[in-house]
Image 1 (spheres, each protein chain N blue to C red):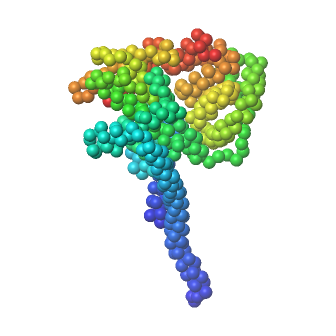
Image 2 (cartoon, one colour; image 1 turned 180 degrees about the vertical axis):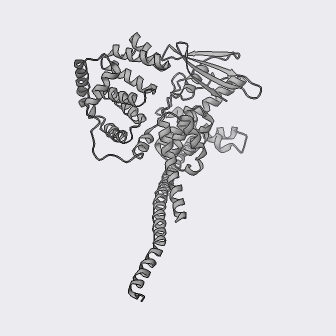
Image 3 (cartoon, rainbow over the protein chains, first blue to last red; image 1 turned 180 degrees about the horizontal axis):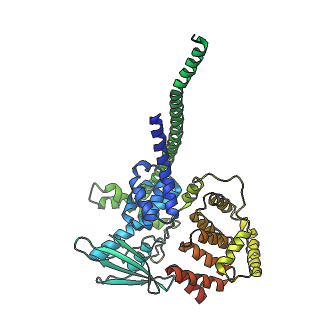
Amino acid sequence: MKLILLILITVNIYASTKQNMFNLYQNKKYEDVCKIGFDNFRQNKSDEEFISIYAFACLHSDYIDRLAIPVAMLKFSNEARANSAYFSVILMQKKLLYHAMVDGYDLSSMNLPTTDYVLSKVFDLYSKLPKHDARAFYLFEDPNNMKLTYKLYLSKSDRLNKMVIEEFYDTITIKRHVYW
Amino acid sequence: MININELEDRWLKYKIKSYIPYIVILLSIAIIITIFTLFNSKSVIDKTTVAEIHKENTPEIQVQNVVIEPIKDIPNIEIKKESIAIPNLEKTTQRVIQNQPIQEKNMNYTVPIYNPNKKTMLAPSLDFMSKLQDNTLPYFDNEREVTVNKPNQEKSVQKNTQHTTAQKKQKVQIEPIKKQSSIQIDRQNTHDDINQVIKRFKKNNNPALSLFIAKKYYQLGEYHQSYNYSLMTNEINNDIEASWIIFAKSLVKLNEKSMAVETLNKYIAHSSSNRAKILLDEINSGKFK
C-alpha cells in the first residue's frame, strides 16, 4: 500500500509541476518559472508545452543562455518549431551583440531576422551603425515610439564584462536587462 | 459452547478483508500500466509519422538530381570541367559551373531579391498556453453566469470611480453590447475560451484569471466587460498594475476619459507606477484614444 501511495504521489507531483509553472507564469513570476523548469527539465524533456513555458519564462527573466536547449528540443509541432526559430534568433543576436560590444566585432554587414523582443530591437539599431570605435554607451531611439529610448553599455569588471540594456520612457527607467 | 457457524463466518470475513490490500494493489498497478501504455502509443504514433514524413521527403531530393541531369547536354560543360584542376572538388564545382549557363538560358527562374533594409519578423506562438489553461481546474456545470452584469458589480463601480451617475452607467452598459454582436461571429472560439476561464475564475476567485479575462475582452473590443473584470481584479487585489492599466484603457474606450485620468492619478499616487504614468501621459496628449 505504501508503495502505491508513493507511486501515486510521484505521478501527481510530475503532473502538477507544469501546472504550477503555468500559474506562476500567469502571475508574471518568470524567474521562478525558469528556475522550476531548469530543476525539472530532465523529467519533462519530451513535453513541448513544458519546454515552451520554461523557455518563455527564461526569456522574460533575461536568462537567454538557457534558451539553447529548448531551441534544440522544440521540433515536433509547428508551434514548437516557430518558437524554436524565435528563440534561436534572440540567442544569436545576444551572442553577436555581446561579441561586438566586448571585442568590437563589426555587425554593420548583417541582415538577420528580427523579433519584438528588446534585445532584437537594440541589435537592429546597433547593426545599422557604420563601423566605429567603441563608445562608452549608445543611446538609441525607438523608431516606432519617439519617447522610448534604449541605452546600451558595458558594465566592466575584473572577471567578466556584462552588457546592459536600459529601457527609458521620457527619462524614466522602465526596465534594465543585463546579459553576459 | 463455541458456536462453530459464527466462527466460520467471522473467519471468512477476516479472510476476505486480508485479500483487499492485494486487490487494490493489483488494480492500481493495472490502471498505471494502461495509462503509461496509452501515452507511449501516442508517442510511437508521433515518431512513425515523423519517420513517414522523412520517407516522403527523400524522393524530392532525387527529383532535384534528375532536374540537374539535362545539364550534361550543354556543350560548355566539358570545357569548363577541364579547366578545374582540383580533383576532389570536381563534382561540386561541376554543378556550380553547370548551373550558371542554365540560369542565363532559363530566364523563368525566380531569383529572390535581396533587400538589406527589409527584415523578416519572427513572432512567438503562444497557442499552447490556451491548451494548458483548459487543463488547469475542473469547471462549473452552469455556464454564462458571470458574463451577465450583476447589480453588485454596479455598486463596486460606484465605489471605485466615485463620480459616476446612474445614467452614465446605463449608457456605458448599452454601447459595448452593440459591438458584441458584430464581433461574436468571427471569434466564437475565443468566446468559448473566455467562458471556460470565467468558470474557473468563479471557482477559485484568482485575480490572474479575472485579469486574463479583462485583457481578452479588451482585445475583442468588448470594453464594458473588460472594465467589469478589471474592476473585479482590483477588488480582489488592488496592487496589480496591469489590471489598473486595462481598467483605465477600457474607461477611455467607453468615452470616460476624465474618469480614467482620475483613476490613474489616484493609482500613481498610491503606487508610483511607471506604466500608469506612461498611459496617463498618452491619454492626456491624445495619443491613446
